[in-house]
Image (cartoon, rainbow, N blue to C red; front, top):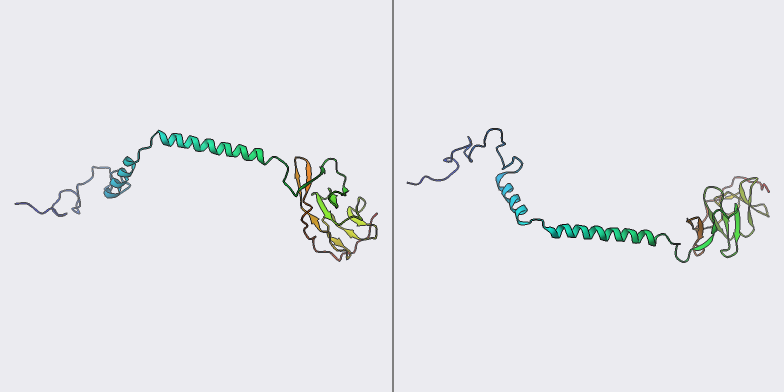
Length: 187
């Protein structure tokens, strides 16, 4: 007569679920990390997908493609900016403030950053006050902020690359909010 094969008739664990593990091994999974059923599935997945030489070749090809793209990017990004940027001159050759007739802008190289102010034909730099001043007595800070009631100067975007100043004369940004701080011309 055949005995039924249920969990209560199998020898092994006290709970009747299977054979007891050898001493010192965990009582679940083949290596102690996964239950038996999940461990068998994981083994099947690994055994079904052996990694061959094609994976080595694919990784080398991907590495070469990334290296070529990186070199191309570095070479292409080293040139001057495209239109509408215009070269205004070498940084070392520019004075503290220079009118550029080609750009119709005032280039100011003092104050920590090179700025190009639009419509500033009658404005110049005063070294005594370290400000921008006009002949009619209007005064601006080096950032273009109007002082003493003067309207602030609009600014063209500037860019320095490889020691050359580039200006985009097609765009202007509004200047900072004017200040009512009284300002006397120094020059």
